[in-house]
Length: 377
Image 1 (cartoon, rainbow, N blue to C red):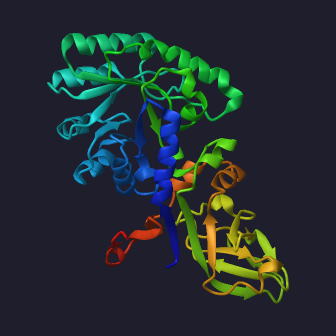
Image 2: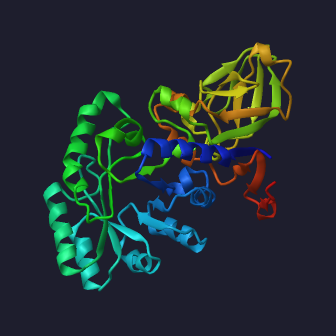
Image 3: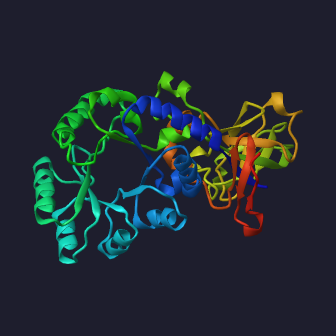
């Protein structure tokens, strides 16, 4: 197997239990958009459902339909702006729809649709949502005219993971407080993963939306990271070892050279698998816990690494290499990105091993013949 991800469902359950401690009496919405942050939406949804989660958040109708078709039970909220051509189908599936404009309200009225909706309030993100005054007007209009069932009102924190900008986050929370008091609406929510961890006591929300911390990643530097366990690791193998005899360029573009005596390992993973090119010329992977530097540019299917002297006698073709592990936040920051981008970038040809009760429960790979379900126990 050339490249794979180990996805530890035991750790997913562990993290969920820690989240429940932070959430207290608040309900938890498991956000599993972007194929469960690259980990597999169905696999994550099933585990969350088995462990008490009844609310799910996805970005779009297509993601919701995948859960619906698979028989996932619970309330499914479409967090994005649902195109008009998908609204009727979404209503038929029983999805809850985010409403951010009066045009959407008029569409529902004109087509005699009557879904459950969440009103989106823009408190400072500038992406989707009504202004404060418009949101109050929209809720009144929908209720007075019987256009839909308003079951939720929510907003989104844009910098909750940036302590240096807490003043802005607290201002967002303050703007939303008028909606927290609308007890006739089933769900009032503004807290995301970072919001829950850092501002859980600053709101009277009764629902929290969590995504990244389900996977054991606290998206800011904090001792709270110790409370969670990593759900996934991304691995590959050495497929070729090249002991350099004379000075030579490595990879495309002649950006780096290897010197005589260097040992260069080629690993079978590239940017098509999710090892993005920003890790070129200096990013690191780990072998036996030792950092190995990427030398030259990452290719589509392969990458070259320089084997440190201390490992030269311990590596061979077939040696396992960890591309991304529990140090994902540090690695992401090192190339100016975030863990989310790395996780969702895992390519289709990266096989997924789902581990539960310490054993492989399922293998999902590009070849259908290799997709296997394993018995528990």
